[in-house]
Image (tube, rainbow, N blue to C red; front, top):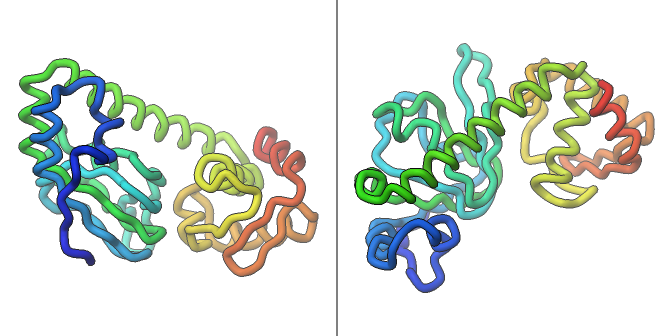
Length: 230
């Protein structure tokens, strides 16, 4: 884990996140309370049940937001991408996390003192409204993802995951899956055995190529059809 670094207000990535709703002095107030940490793939960033003391967003990499179902299984709630507000689901509703956050790629997470964020929510109505809108959009995405996955059969769910990473994360037909087969199963409510079986079927059918964790989509049209009708 790296030593925390303060941000340079002139080039800070917080600017596009907050630019429209805060004044220069308020932005400096946020920026001066910010620090960032680097996490290797597999590192736990926060644990369910821990106290919430900071607002955090993802500067680079990918993380999974997940909740423990039982001793053997987690439920992945969301895959967060750069500049996502990682802990927005809890910071205004409780003092403790109801989920864990783990890096699924080498990632950099930025933290801002939660007291600073809450102070601005109290004093700046436009900032507060922006946070509410962002929180609602995050919730909408999670609900939409759950609904999309729940109405598909097993093959449709795997197709959904592959196209999600190709189109919304890596923007490429060839990419390295950041999730293990077990994690894919936790994301789309399947067993790891079914994930492995269906990926193998897609490979045999010429829909994808598999080389270790690297996936290459060979027949996008067919994969799209399976996702839409599966």
